[in-house]
Image 1 (cartoon, rainbow, N blue to C red):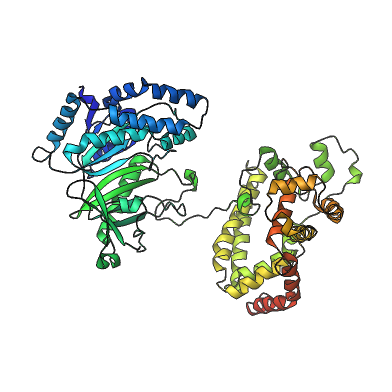
Image 2 (tube, rainbow, N blue to C red):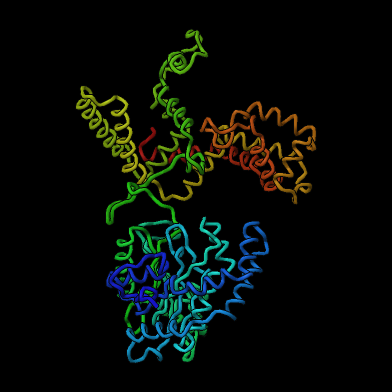
Length: 597
């Protein structure tokens, strides 16, 4: 047999991932970084050519391919039959066995047939960026040398499992292709083991590393047998240990260890250091599996994290620098889950830049529909005065400067004005477009707002609640539409629709099965709000008048959610009753801070 069909994990050259699979490739790469990887070998895809050929020539496999082409639900049954057939018909040749033994002898000359091994599948598609086959392929721990053939075969046939084929189809791989490599490595009898992440997978924080660990083998962590230490201590009531003869057992953890941290401070630092080295080599966020035996740290696996939100490089804060906070208005304010269309963004930009300009001029520049310029007048607008006069903004200023003073505010305001005047004088005669100068001034204003306004947001929970309650009773169109949506739901019988779906509810609307009063009120509703719609800030999105289904769905939700004692109209009325009281409280607060006389 060719030497390339078996490759050592400490090989000086990186093998092709198509031959050693994701896990094998990862372990060889980790070893090349001088990380402590348990010694072992990879049985490459080429090693299993004979087995793959026998399977593909079988009648069962041909039947499977036929059913796969017809998208038949019987595929799972056929695959199980192929697995059973493989267990009874596939064996290693004598030369295969000898090659495995010879390679293990090179690594463990004195005790190759005495130590325990971990037999781990390694698919060419596994652990690639964008795909993670973890949990689909089989791994066997604590395997004796004499039983290697049995567990190599069991690991091999896991690539024929229905879960694997299903996942391949979902990820766009060729489902009918059978390819697998297998790693045989020395079993580390871990005192402590676990998983480490180079970013926090719960909050997508690139500046946080997360480690979960437990006493014993890593199966208790990755298999969910226990709640591991997360630094944050967990409930370590179970432990996975190697059996003396073969395999592993789940044992009860002793009470003393349940109260202890499984990792020391020094070990945590050591693991984080290795995570950083590996992430820098991969150039993507990674997770690792590790084990510690007799205070020696072993890296057992590393792979790219596939379930995180990728941030553009320009959004990433450099290590140890103050973080920048980015706020997506379309998502945070408008609730958009998709980007605005190009047309929608252009129209919105046009609207913003048109404030204060002659409307007739704009219309004539962008279309011939309107000819009589005398029919339109200019919008004489002072943008800052408009913002300042909005009642909610007046309250916000009092709220935001809760921990500031009037003198501090005036100081920073004057500083901003001085810097802005200097910037304008410096650039007014340059070739820089006026729009660029204005954008830079606005960016500078935002910086001041972020640096001197946002940090003083009050910790006064009661005041914040009063402020939020006050917002609820303003006659904003969104609030009024919500009240009218609820009013429409009151014409319907909740009990009649408790077990209905949204589609059934909408069909009843189309079929005129709602009370007559509903349709009369709905017509009035559409005259008031029909110009609105989901994602309405984007001109491309349909309005309620064009597609009423979205608002009918909201009425359906209101019908099921609210009742006489719990509804937005009652909240609105109750809050309005306390409106003057809240105003007085906020006014008193603003007066104490010097913002009102």
